[in-house]
Each structure stands twice: as C-alpha cells, then as structure tokens.
Image 1 (spheres, rainbow, N blue to C red):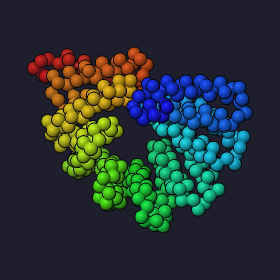
Image 2: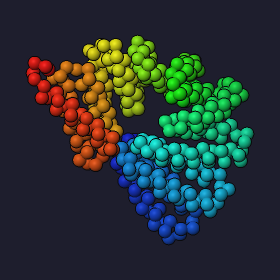
Image 3: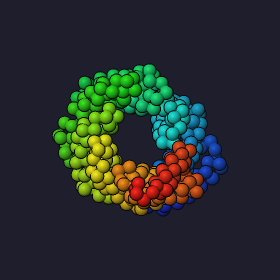
Image 4: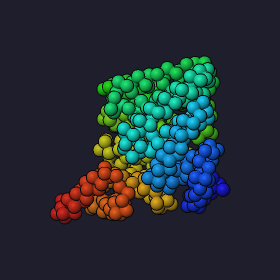
Length: 391
C-alpha cells in the first residue's frame, strides 16, 4: 500500500504507512533477533522508507534509514557470507549512502561508500566471471568512484575510469546491438574525459564528449519515442555546453545548450507532469542564460533565467517541504540578478535572502549555503545603499 501511495505522489501517506510498518518490524525483530527473514524484510523496508523521505527532501531522515539498513545487512552477511542476494543488497545500500554523502558534500564519506560498492562488485564477479550483467555493474561502479575521486586523487580516478571503459568496451564489442551497453560506453567515454580535463586536457575531454554524442545520437534517432534516450543526448549536450563555458567558448556553449533546450521542451511538453523533465528543462535554460551572459547579451540571458525561475517556482510550490527545490529557486533568483539592472536585482535578491533566511531558521542549510546567504545579503545591502543615480 505504501508503494502505491508513493507512486501516486502521496508522499505523506506513504511515509506514514512506512513508519507504521517499521514500528511493527522493529518489534518483531526484537522478539526474534535471529530471524533473518524479519531482518532482511526490515532492511528492505528501511530502504523504501528512505527513498520516500529523500523524495520529500528529508535528507537527514533518508540517510538515517539507509545507515540503519546498512547495519542490518552487514550482520546478515556476517552470518551468511555465501548469500549472494544479501551481498547484492549490501552493495545497493552502500551505493545509496554514497549518493547521499556526495549530495551533502561529504566527499570522504562518498568515496568510502563507493569503494565498498566496487569491492562488492568485484566479489560478485569473481563468483560468476562470465556474467555480463555483473561485468556491466562493475564498470558502472568503477566509473562512479572515478568521478568522485577525481578532485582528491586524479591518478587513481584515471585508472578507475580506464578500467571502467575497458570493461564496457569489451561488452559493447561482443554485443553491439545492446543499447544499454552502448549508452554506458558513451558515458564511460565522458567519465574518462572528465579525468583528462582535470589533467589540464580540456580539448581531450571535448573530444571524448563528441565521441559520446556520436554513440548517443544514433540511439535516440533510431528510437525517437524513447524519452530516456532523448534525455541522454540532452545530458551529454549540457556537458558539452558546460565545458565550452569553462573554455570561454560562449558561442559553442550556446549551440550545445540550444540543441539541449529543443530536446527538453519536447520532453516536458510530452509529459508536463513529470517534475524531472521540468527540472531538466530549467537547467537547460540556465545554460542558455550563462552562454548569453558570456556573449554580453544580458537581455537574452535574463529572459532565459526568468523562464527557468518560473519553472523552479512551480516545482517548489508543488512540493514546499523540498529544500533542494527551494535552493533551485534561490539559485535562479541570483542568476536573474546578475543579468538585471540594480533596481530589479534588489527585488530578486531580497526574495532570495528571505528564502535562505527561512531555511536557516529551520536548520536546513549546510555550512556552504550559510556562507552563500551571507554573500547574497552583502550584495543586497550594497545595491540597496547605492545612490539612485547609480542604479
């Protein structure tokens, strides 16, 4: 029932049902702590409850549930090290925790959890070395660890991404008709390009991105009704645009972001209730704004930022307890301020500051976000105190 309520978008009802279920399972597990069936069911329910909490923006609650599930699954594996299913479950939990830690800017925690995922992926593959699904999983986990290791250990990240690419390349060559592996190969190319960019080789990364697009575009063209394939192209295009911005190639960035925007408008129009598509559309508009601002087209940048802001407002209003959506609104308010005159900037910065102050009072801001608030307050005060003639 909780799964049904969550699928219907009734998060509060789903959360209440999961909480009630957890109370019962906690009682049962205490009465019979050696019952591995109850323990396994409890851990699975904790994972599902964590997903619901995360969807509602409750990152702390989600992480607590994932970590409780991790403790249970560690004990299960310790009791039965040969249980492959439980080992897979343990790897999934570590993956969820890695994602959470990364979102919370806990790089060390994310790396530690991701290393456990790679370790478990290797263990599972040792048991079934010819299992192509496990090979694919290992490639993915290596690439993910490479991504988050890049800033602290570029040499290690390079080795991880090269191993990931090697595995998925062999799978793709062995089964060229496998669309999923073709897509993974394209993303592995991009991951390696990210490492090469860190090694001061941005043009090499640009080449990797174009190679990736060369794989992704035909897949989307061959299946134009497949929305995920269309989105994959959009993601790659946004990375091309982001790299072009970093290289001060604003014209190139604009070309990539405009193609991305066309795709996202089509996806968002086809499924207007899909909040993920709406958010992606907003991010593509942000890219357009950044590129136009770089070319000196402040008016064009402001128009793009304001459209993006309108989307983010609707998403935040539909889910007022989601902190991440509130942060998206603030980000776009700041964007609008950079492309506006002083009078307009004062208006939007006042709103941005008010939102962050409310979140701060509720204890929902990270240390970095608190510094951001101080920076916006400072800019707002300086603009507000400027003589009218300067504005």
